[in-house]
Length: 63
Picture 1 (tube, rainbow, N blue to C red):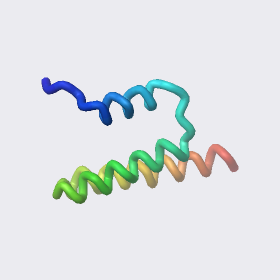
Picture 2: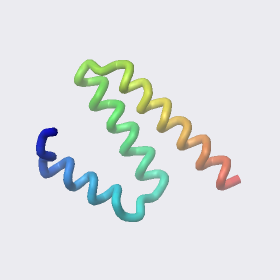
Picture 3: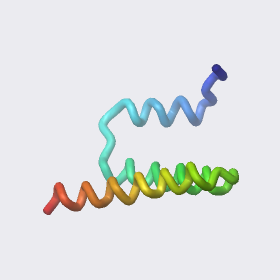
Picture 4: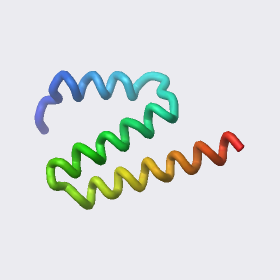
Protein backbone atom coordinates (compact mmCIF):
# COMPACT_ATOMS: atom_id res chain seq x y z
CA UNK A 1 0.00 0.00 0.00
CA UNK A 2 1.36 3.43 -0.89
CA UNK A 3 2.13 6.24 1.53
CA UNK A 4 -0.50 8.98 1.81
CA UNK A 5 0.52 12.40 0.57
CA UNK A 6 0.14 15.53 2.71
CA UNK A 7 -3.23 16.49 1.19
CA UNK A 8 -4.63 13.02 1.87
CA UNK A 9 -3.35 13.08 5.46
CA UNK A 10 -4.94 16.52 5.94
CA UNK A 11 -8.29 15.23 4.66
CA UNK A 12 -8.15 12.21 6.95
CA UNK A 13 -7.45 14.47 9.95
CA UNK A 14 -10.42 16.65 8.97
CA UNK A 15 -12.68 13.62 8.65
CA UNK A 16 -11.51 12.28 12.00
CA UNK A 17 -12.92 15.32 13.82
CA UNK A 18 -16.38 16.82 13.95
CA UNK A 19 -17.63 17.52 10.45
CA UNK A 20 -20.78 19.39 9.50
CA UNK A 21 -23.09 17.57 7.10
CA UNK A 22 -22.90 20.41 4.59
CA UNK A 23 -19.11 20.19 4.58
CA UNK A 24 -19.27 16.43 4.04
CA UNK A 25 -21.67 16.89 1.12
CA UNK A 26 -19.30 19.44 -0.43
CA UNK A 27 -16.35 17.08 0.00
CA UNK A 28 -18.22 14.20 -1.63
CA UNK A 29 -19.26 16.43 -4.55
CA UNK A 30 -15.65 17.59 -4.95
CA UNK A 31 -14.54 13.97 -4.93
CA UNK A 32 -17.03 13.25 -7.71
CA UNK A 33 -15.61 16.11 -9.76
CA UNK A 34 -12.03 14.91 -9.24
CA UNK A 35 -12.99 11.37 -10.23
CA UNK A 36 -14.82 12.57 -13.33
CA UNK A 37 -11.81 14.68 -14.39
CA UNK A 38 -9.62 11.59 -14.06
CA UNK A 39 -11.97 9.61 -16.29
CA UNK A 40 -13.54 7.53 -13.51
CA UNK A 41 -17.10 8.20 -14.59
CA UNK A 42 -18.83 5.37 -12.73
CA UNK A 43 -17.10 6.21 -9.45
CA UNK A 44 -17.93 9.89 -9.99
CA UNK A 45 -21.59 9.01 -10.48
CA UNK A 46 -21.55 7.01 -7.23
CA UNK A 47 -20.03 9.96 -5.35
CA UNK A 48 -22.63 12.34 -6.77
CA UNK A 49 -25.42 9.94 -5.88
CA UNK A 50 -24.05 9.68 -2.33
CA UNK A 51 -23.98 13.49 -2.05
CA UNK A 52 -27.57 13.69 -3.30
CA UNK A 53 -28.62 11.07 -0.75
CA UNK A 54 -26.84 12.93 2.06
CA UNK A 55 -28.65 16.14 1.10
CA UNK A 56 -31.99 14.34 1.08
CA UNK A 57 -31.36 12.73 4.47
CA UNK A 58 -30.16 16.02 5.94
CA UNK A 59 -33.29 17.81 4.69
CA UNK A 60 -35.49 15.10 6.22
CA UNK A 61 -33.73 15.34 9.57
CA UNK A 62 -34.21 19.13 9.60
CA UNK A 63 -37.92 18.94 8.75
